[in-house]
Length: 405
Image 1 (tube, rainbow, N blue to C red):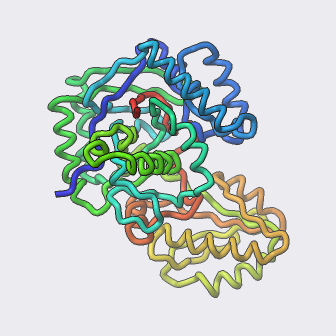
Image 2 (spheres, one colour):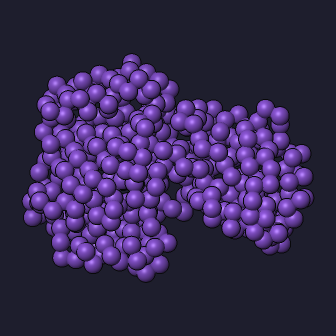
Image 3 (cartoon, rainbow, N blue to C red):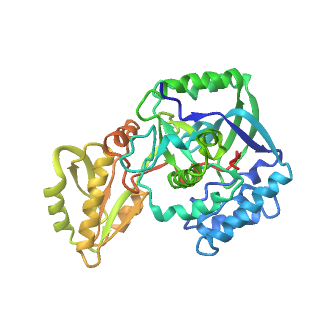
């Protein structure tokens, strides 16, 4: 019988009462807004904070990944030496986070890296949702390679329409120990966490065992590249271990937050496309010939700053349709001397960008939640920039830790 790829962990939390300063947003957010990270830097200067243990990608053009990794690893060792952590043994953490779409419920635990494969045509129980870009792995591997701790910003998704795993914990919080309850910095909302252990954890394990019987147990939502880096380092380390050592080694697992894709507060925001420097009439004519079918998935195209029409595109799944559109516009842009593709989250911004006569935009529809697993199963990973899970400030903040050495 297949085992669940998600399990309890020995989770570390700081004893500090000021968790607002401790907890900072995922390193891959606000990469084009270094002023955000400058504010965080000033706020937590001289304080106990996860900021000192991560590598904000907004700073990659200022400091080398090696320097940042050395600094981050030293900060981790200082925390361990100073005994700042309390350990929650053999536990999950049930999380309620106030985000833009409401209250998002999650479960922090350990994901088995041996059950995970990020290759595009993976058949593993745990799969990536988007194509992994190899060039993005080295900085993440550098910081984890010698790190004594891991801090997760990774969010993973399960397909649980019956709401059998996480949601029942909401009604049992009175029986759980509350371990944090505070406001996240920089308008990140409020977050509350409870320790889940003993009988309560075994009830979660029982519900997860049903999920484990499926071909796909978990799909990665946020943090694809960070998890891929952990996987690469684990494969490298595992080759030096005996099977018995590998079975119990802490680096075999990665601490993540598990969410139900059917949680009402989990929202998929479309990422639109705009193509500059092209003959829009010729592009549409060729697109009609190559991609259009009567019963395809509908998108809108924008010319002159307004919606100019609709087209139904082929594709076995939602992600398959985006893959075909993406390949087409990249190829067409490459044929044009000045052709260039950009990715836009905001519809109003796209309308403004297409006011030029040689620009065309494509408004993608919102993805139905059932399309996530359907695409991963039928077509493999989504193409780049297919969708975003929630808004930037709703992304996971670093909070819990775990020893990996």
